Length: 250
Length: 264
Image 1 (tube, rainbow over the protein chains, first blue to last red):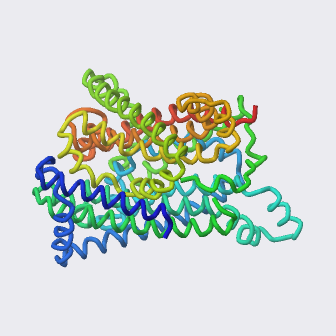
Image 2 (spheres, each protein chain N blue to C red):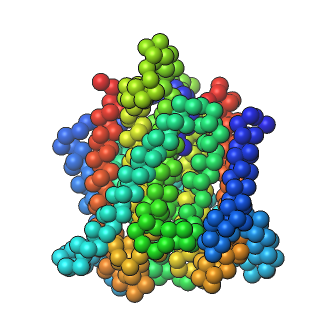
């Protein structure tokens, strides 16, 4: 493991230790934040309930559906827009300001469209994450070195071959950033939707625990969520490093 | 974030700025297409679910002329303004420090991107318990959404400054503030503006989400009330208002961005 990783672990451990100490000494009100050890105990207790595990599974399912949909649709849209530079330029300011509109306010509309099931939540995750994939795909495509494109032309590759053998590998770091954001935003969208409006899933369970003052359950489940999202993020991050190293370092 | 900046990159030649009338026409066409799509959607699924553009605009007019509206707007504006200043400058300072001191940047980057990825809505109970109901909770919500992207953008930009600049600074014996002011800021200005664009949008989103949960006033509160009472006209009117505001601000920053990125 690298020196930076060790520092990171020490830093996180120190943060947890300080938090634990502050809570135990009463510097932080216990009704606000509970010590990390109690959060872990709360997570264990919460996970032993079958209904909670079922809720987490439901959330993960919806998030997964949203990721798959937004990555495929986002990359396809990015490829199409790249071929239509005029449309791309006209859309640019809208793409950038897209994230200022809280998309989950359209939940009622989605419920009417898809019915009272998990699909409205998938739709929220999708509309929240697809634009990030489009933006990053476009970014990556515009940075494919022109020499590579000309080589593909010289070798008379078909359009599909060019995309598979030249464009995608060359734009890979940006495509991966898009995938990473799709994962993050799908989680945010689905859980925010559950938080506000659903009656099942991880987001709902956390909101319910908050409303009934069950701090150990609430913090325990927030911790579970952070571990899931953080774990996925770290896994992609190390994969990304490997790609960068193969390309001759960052 | 947008890593791998040292993979040799060339902007696509086809995407050269043309500027002028043609661009404005294209943007107008995009807006018209969006309105047409919206109208079509309203007609197919019924205006009690998705109100038509005309209805939403009429509602927007009544909302904006309502005497209560100024109070809501002021409340949101105050929270958003404070959060924006804190997020942009906090992110800028953090990003510059982490970018110059490479090792701490390396330690912090995965932590920051993990923090960026977690659904911050779930932190709302914690923020409320720490800050209480009111404006400080809203500001905190805006800041935690906006500060991380600005930090990551700035840090990556500072890292990519050519090392000869830093060596020059050392041989000129610049002090740290001089180094930041005369070398780091000018060299990274375009990327900083790109980061500000994202930070602006996300801070607005964070402030609105904060208001939805932690407030009895402001645009976010109006949104959640409209959502609870299923007031579709109001929802669409407020969405139009927010979209226009965010798009105008973003277009302004984009203009600045293109000016700065353009080779001089």
